[in-house]
Length: 186
Image 1 (cartoon, rainbow, N blue to C red):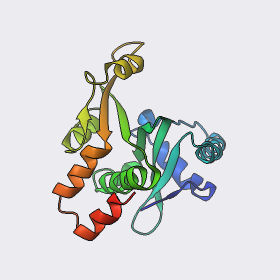
Image 2 (cartoon, helix red, strand yellow):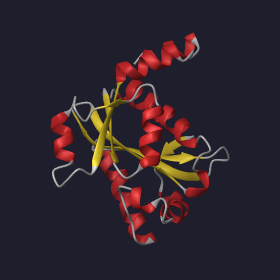
Image 3 (cartoon, rainbow, N blue to C red):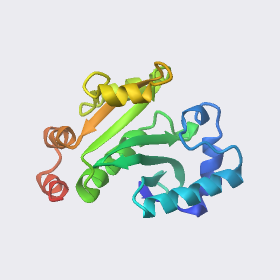
């Protein structure tokens, strides 16, 4: 479902990212294939330096269909950025990718908090975030971060996924005992 970023996936990912319903919501925008390759190389280097964590999302046949990232990592927290190619919207890939990524972040890497900034005009993403039982709207509880994000006007809503809230979700959602024990070891 997820793999580390690889330059071999750039062609397929660039074609998917360039779709007009996807492109506006991608954080690392590239206007050409060459620029996308450059950004991907930079992303791989930034991960090696601990600045971000980036994975390619794969479909059931191992084809790249999007990316999921944790940007701006500081003090055990970072900002989630994810996108899927248009043909893969509404098919459950986003949820599967997030579950795999969150488990890696929280239980293998040691991240404590994942933030999501979502444009107030991106109703589809807001609805998706608010459906998740472990997501907390943080406009008020993390006011200083919310104000930094919106220094130039009311653009974003801020959401937070605390590790303890996600762990509680796993326990309540019926994750098998041995899977939960493995996940919680870290």
